[in-house]
Length: 244
Length: 202
Ligand SMILES: Cc1cc2nc3c(=O)[nH]c(=O)nc-3n(C[C@H](O)[C@H](O)[C@H](O)COP(=O)(O)OP(=O)(O)OC[C@H]3O[C@@H](n4cnc5c(N)ncnc54)[C@H](O)[C@@H]3O)c2cc1C
Image (cartoon, rainbow over all chains, first blue to last red; front, top):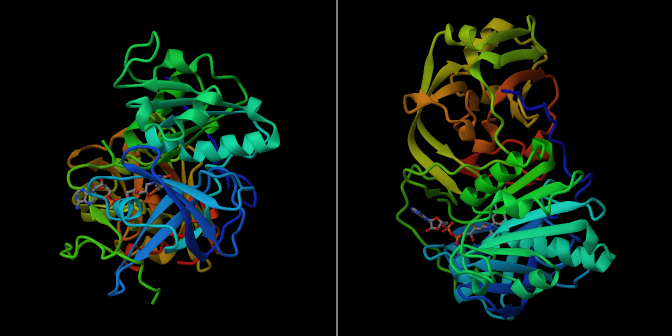
């Protein structure tokens, strides 16, 4: 058995911007996908983000109790609004409020952008592997690539239960993303999980692989990539959503 | 106090007093959270080194570390991603034992923990001394699973769990604090769950 080579995990993209608490006014609320909400926020004195970064949303109750959660940015830095896409968890505290209660004109406290590791630099080739709502940071990367005229740099693979549940499905399919559905067959492909054969045609040496989704999806996708021979230092993982 | 958010009341007010603010009880689960793929490390090739601002830099092999006086932790752990896990049981050795052998010099005020993968996290020396930190190889009486940092991880249960570096191989004593991996990427330098020190500036 060979030992993994030692890797020094660094600061990610040098000088990734980060901002403090700000006030965001909800400019748009849409529900293009069941049990989810897409929020467009007008953030006061916004610090431009890099694709892959996230914001923290903080809610405050009348007695001063607060709850805060992280949400990846879906919009490109050039978009005048910050777009978030939130999956409503049945028992969730913050996602249910954002999905069920928030309306245009509401004011939210947000902090960001945050994160310097799970960030695409806009010039290097990347393989993006998402499970379900894990596509959100990749939508920002894709939109950034379009703005730069460099969509050739990105390869995208997405795993989701059904196409109807996939956030930004149209945009991803148009960009040539491979969409694997675990609960319905698509074309000649039967329902099933993302497999090594799916990633083989997308993987090229020199790519950074970004993996985003639930903890169990991220773990499985990380293992697939290692199995294909991707070096550990070329894999960046971000987990969110329920576990298991 | 920030202005209340329209329509938000907040949930789960009968909270277990062991739960720090903003955390939920994950129950029997133990989510695997990592920024990188898990390395496979065999115990025979693992070692831990204490170096930097110490009088005698020391390295222990797996067998040597297991001959040190055993020490265990029973209690709760808290992850910055908002889950907490109650009544965990870890076994290994106290960081105090390693430091007693390596003897930090008077200038040593901070520690950088480094893992086999190059992951780093920084801690004030005071947060890993006095029975507050361990290096552990057992969870609930079994070998620590690789996805949770096996064969050996750092355990600093009074801070958010990103401080408890998985696959630990080195503790370097420093005179000045330096940010580790997540700390360079926007997370708090200390990470006290009771003060919700999640991000820089909290
Ligand atoms: C960097 C990052 C980026 C993220 N980006 C996104 C994104 O773009 N979109 C997105 O939708 N999410 C994202 N997330 C996840 C998001 O931050 C929240 O975790 C998610 O919205 C759930 O929050 P909640 O308050 O609704 O649920 P919580 O109230 O935190 O509950 C979370 C889960 O735990 C369970 N739970 C809660 N309390 C208990 C209890 N007492 N016992 C047992 N189980 C319990 C709930 O059933 C639920 O499934 C991201 C997370 C991170 C870390």
